[in-house]
Image (cartoon, rainbow, N blue to C red; front, side, top):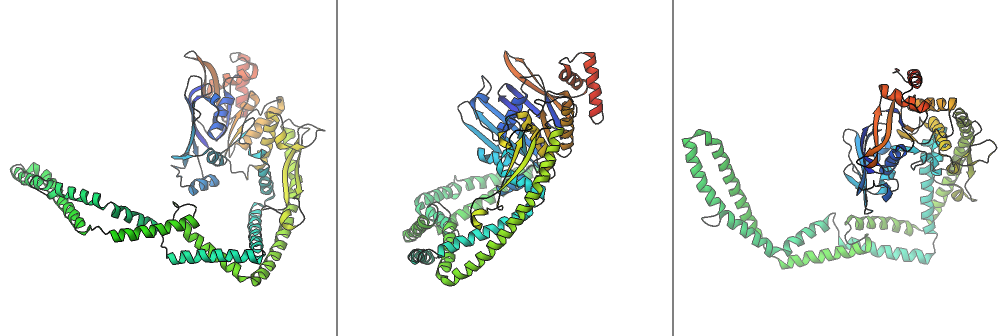
Length: 569
């Protein structure tokens, strides 16, 4: 849930900081006041495109910051953060993104700087924006299969199938290596055998490279280190004017002063503690100096060992700067592959049997999943069309296209999620051709399709905050009332934002935010603030008739709010 949003120097917004509540929130205001700019700022925060035109005229940097509450239902978002070591604070995470007029931009999740791709990936767990902006997850064909599977109740079964399919792919890859020509296999065995022996002969230890680098640094810096230690010893206890000698005299004077004035006893004790602590430090430095011996032979040994390790890293790790563990990992994997390649024909026969069994299981399960999807597709189409009719799209047709993956054998026909290509199709007007959901031109139609689908998928979708932009395009009357009612119902366990010009939708909202445009210091700026009470009555009246002061409009607005808002006005 989005709890707070701060926007600075974005488009015509000078500065806005606003808190949001749960439930259904309407954003209203005159045309051009900046409602879509507010949503554009949210889209920018979530990883949307960064363009210099987004920076307010006269400013050098646009910044958007959002605070999100991640409750127990936000399991995917929490797991994403946990995997990257990013901590929540009181179940909340702060997202921040900026764009400078130099073109430089940056983003943070919590205190961690992230790429735009990371920001986009993480924010997809938090907010869906539907309308003319990005983050429209239902327009991604890859998401259609997930929603259909969720509606069919087979999500867990599909995950199990993916694991089964992965096992088949892995065994096929192994068999492919075994089926390579003998000459290729023998060359691979020779190469791996050499690598395994070379690494074995080195007798590497975990973390050895780091320890040797520290030891080399100490041995190579002997003269400077010895000089520093001698300087410290000389300053502490080397002559009459050293720290300890001066402190010793000071302690005697302090003891005498404390015998004359008992209030100085604590200070005297502290001074004595300092003396003993420094004496102990001096002795430890002396002991260290006594053991400090320059050993050029040992330094040469360390450097030779490091040279060996760097050479192994160059061959078997991603780089010479890589951790030694990469070489050890290569060693383990090479041993396994050697064992597999050396097993020869017996492995090939056994793998063939295992693959045949897996192919059978994969095909049977893929077929069962496909049948379940086709069975659910018809039900889903009917549900969506019923809702679209209530939302002012009575002539719309919705269909789920399920087609077989191309190919002739199991491997080609099946993918990680089964044998089906799945895509949602829509015909917004009666008699029109069914087209992919992504090709709907009207923002209002698109938003209503999204609303219908979100209503159906609400039980299974983990995204807690939805934004509907342009949802009222081309509707009015009873359809608008139905749209408002649907959003109100969907917002029972979601946070929903909706930009609308229609009072019949706005009156259903739990919260209303007004966006106004005015002149501040000689330039155009947007002002954003929540409204309630009589101020909300006046805004609903303006939305009804364009007149916020008419007694008839005010009374009509008050009646509507009392009818549709829980608790009335």
